[in-house]
Image (cartoon, rainbow, N blue to C red; front, side, top):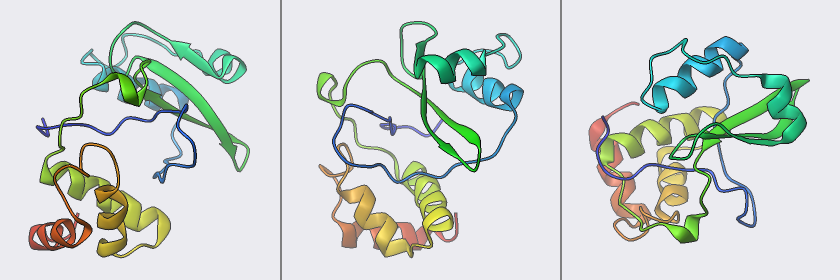
Length: 147
């Protein structure tokens, strides 16, 4: 467990979200989704074609229970799971430093950013913005070493 707040994707917000994508099979995506939903992997097979066709499928109420088809990349659907509620409907909870470090590693790898760029991006996001400046977060992440 990471402790603290978590990052969620909200498709209703204006602009873009920086992300790290992985090419996985439908079964692998389903297993990761199940784990994030606190269920045993392999319990539910996701119908990827139905998710792509609908753009949004709410599996159950709750966090990480809604799957979105947000784009296509190199002929593959880009899917994510997140909450069904909007960003404005929740109280923000600052994320833990180890969680931010894991996210920063993905942002640096995917976008060619340095640690300061990743920290600056994160420090502008709700939750982290109430706790961190870009400079303070970059310094704290640097002390943790590579992600």
